Image (cartoon, rainbow, N blue to C red; front, top):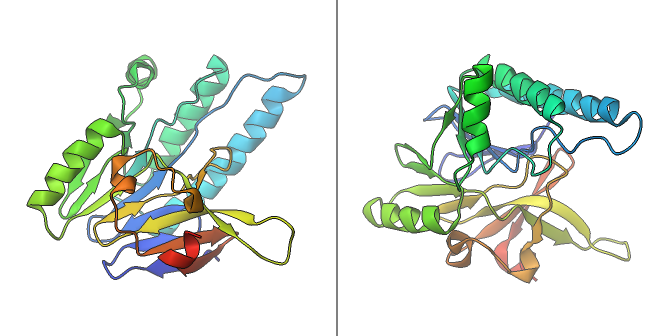
Length: 243
């Protein structure tokens, strides 16, 4: 059973790499990679399809537990190098899995023409938006343009919460091993929440290095890190986590 942690704001963090906003009925994820590069050796397609099946199984469990009205994926879910046949199968399977439980909304940041092309060509049902506002929530990618809009939005919503992607943060936890262990993590601030990468193949930036890409992360007053260790959540105060 995956750990869950409810924040003071009522947001629930899930050790499977998602955040649940119960009042809005929104399940949010970031760093989701659909499909993958073409096979480089015999059997590569079978390996890729096996990984896809595993990812869809995990995703189905997550959706069944929360039954969201909307599933929001922050960031571009399409990898840069694609096997077209695998991409079609992966995207159709992913959309079908999500839309069994509600709407799918993609917030990729920079415009991604391939998403519109895929939606039209294969008749898929999902929205592509620059941002999604829902009550006191604003969900964005976190690139420069959306960060500027989010700052303006926060100025008019003193109790608002901006949820964003882009960083794919990683906590380095020192245990009784020569090298620190890397754990994807949530970054928590009173007015911001940065989500970890959902897909294991998506790389992340160590929190301790402080080299953030998004102005939303650079300017945040982070209070703690919530690291994902398997199916457990480990909450660390910010000064300790940032060392």
